[in-house]
Length: 243
Ligand code: G3P
Ligand code: MG
Image (cartoon, rainbow, N blue to C red; front, side):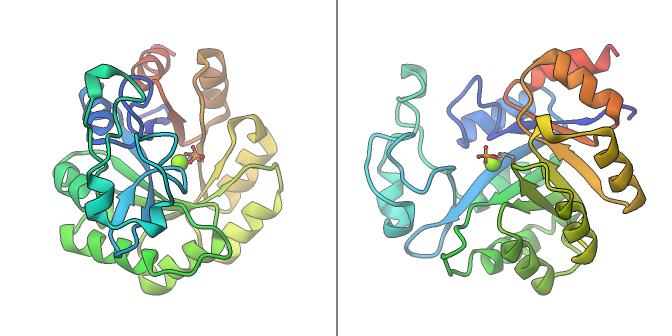
């Protein structure tokens, strides 16, 4: 394929509530090359798919994800905030997502959400689930937490990882090289020709987020990024397939 991978951000989150099975199914249906989802640990140690540290914005409940059990989280409605059509959409676990995508021919980007002061065993649980479904060849684990990525690498050096960042610091490429991290995941406005050249030299991929503007998508494709993370995978596919 001579164009960047089109990776659906939080599933196809322009069309269905982010990080839910509906958004993931929609991303598959639209022909996305990859799907990005955010994960955290519930109080009782389940890896659940949700972006914020609290359930407040994306459900009808209130409270921190880390202080609720899976059973409590499953009682909440994660769809109605988006549209009535998705009323009673439940939170999903990473295990449910892997089970659904295990035979899908695309890239699964699992983004671990973890604050620097948070200590839990989410990395171990994620690696266990990757092993359970034997899907190492279609996974990339990313995080803003370098520590989290190093923990993944320590648990299994063969799981591909991507370091996320939101500032144009060149140090991240150095850091990626130093720690044998496979990709950088920069904010799209920070991607430059120099960055691409440095990445090529270091054999590091660039997956950039979150690009919903067709002009920008085309520019980034010309620069040679390896993946574009977008809320509108259908629009991106149309734009990039016709370059
Ligand atoms: O993984 C790319 C992107 O999802 C990072 O930002 O806040 O949308 O998780 P955020
Ligand atoms: Mg994310």
